[in-house]
Length: 106
Image 1 (cartoon, rainbow, N blue to C red):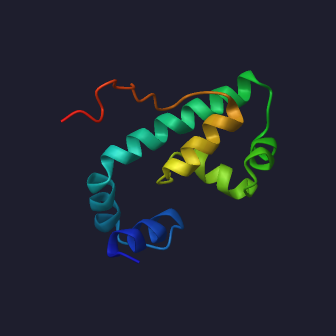
Image 2: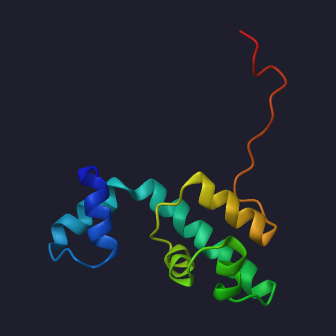
């Protein structure tokens, strides 16, 4: 496991007591943290709009309710697989990648 991943894991579990280290880690990962928080907000608002619980979402995605809790806290570094599973389960789109007709042209 990379050093950054170890630090992220410790931070997410509250196992690091060094405030300076936590601040530096947040600064280094500012980009994905913002995106993760935006996804969390969209997940929560979609759950509310669909009158769906986090437990129901967990069941649809075949993950634990704890995993959904981490996602909606906005501090989880989500994989593309997880984002795709959220999109499918909620019937929404987080990422729209435009198709290019000339994708294989050199």
